[in-house]
Image 1 (cartoon, helix red, strand yellow):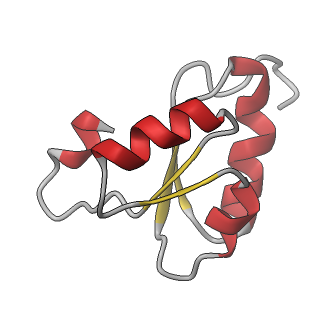
Image 2 (cartoon, rainbow, N blue to C red; image 1 turned 45 degrees about the vertical axis):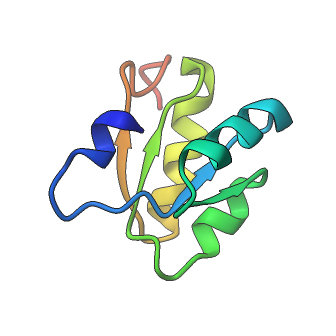
Length: 86
């Protein structure tokens, strides 16, 4: 989030995390961003153009696929998938 926030013209609109403690910390540090617990709300948000996926590698494929199918630009950390088929 820190690096993303330093990109000219970029705006950290939403942050999604399942951990309530992480959400509270992120919300306190990013008062201009919406912090949510459910990924679907990010995907349904028409004003969100792109998502950055930083999850355990086993979740990268499905999470990125959902974002792409929702019309979002996607940045996923390495590895993009854990299986060649994906």
